[in-house]
Amino acid sequence: MSPELIALIVAATLDTLTMVLIAGVLGVTFGLPLGIFLATSRTGEMLAAPWANLMLGFVVNVTRSTPFIILVVAIVPLTRLIVGTSIGTQAAIVPLTLAAIPFIARIVEGAIREVDQGLIEAARAMGAGPLQIIIKVLVPEALPAIVLGLTLALVSLLGFSAMVGAVGGGGLGDLGIRYGYQRFMPEVMAIVVAVLVILVQGAQTLGEHLSRRVNKRSRST
Image (cartoon, rainbow, N blue to C red; front, top):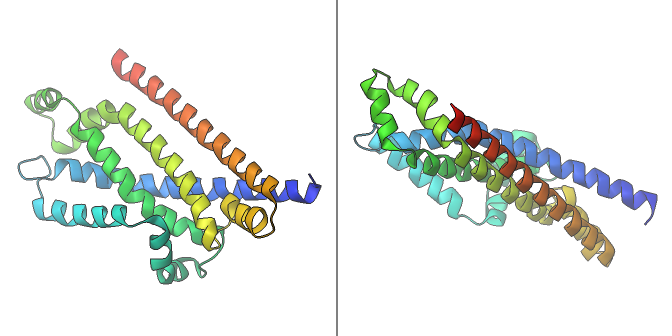
């Protein structure tokens, strides 16, 4: 393998990590509070706002049900408005983030709803308000499941990042298409797949490790 090709693979890997990590951070920043709100805002719940819950839930469902490649193309004007271009690593971050937010929101919502209601009632009996219950009861108790869910989201973003390469998004997907497919270099495609497998396996292992550590801490406290 030539030094030039090695340099391309390293650069593409770094681009993929950059877009996935930034999209992941933005997805958590917006998806975590959205998921908490969706889990606590139905009729009769502590942050009851059923109409807002219904509307936000609808938007989340529409976004999640849209195939990612269609989402990438559909929001090209928005991508250009935000980053000034529709191709490259920076442009890929926009659809990746929009795909991550509803995915993470539903993960967080599901984890929050699995928390034992007895703990919530106990906190209420002690005089805790809604915000205190969310911060001190719901999130800590749901944290192991949230970490595992975020691991799944990160793995999905790695797959999406390869897919966005089909429309000039940069990263490993773009490298595999331009060299492995268009230039008939199967060895490049094989390397791209191998690197993606390693990244996915690393993310999965790290997420499971963090989830176990968080779970042990919550039990010890």
